[in-house]
Length: 58
Image 1 (cartoon, rainbow, N blue to C red):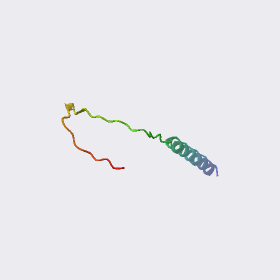
Image 2 (image 1 turned 135 degrees about the vertical axis):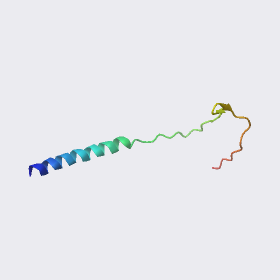
Image 3 (image 1 turned 30 degrees about the vertical axis):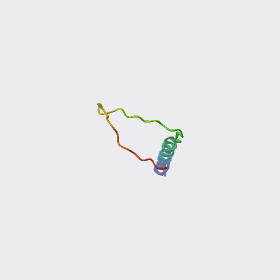
Image 4 (image 1 turned 120 degrees about the horizontal axis):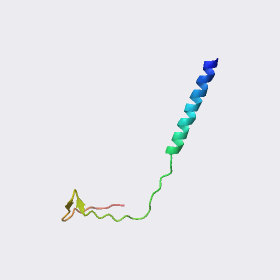
């Protein structure tokens, strides 16, 4: 009976620890609703000449 009680206590501690880890990992995500201007000037140290047309659909 003593080992059964010990096992239940250890499993309870493990379960509580796992719940605490899940709660810490479940942080709310912050999203930005504004438009971000992106201008790429160099790729791998080389300047970009010209461009590729990109169509943006909504």
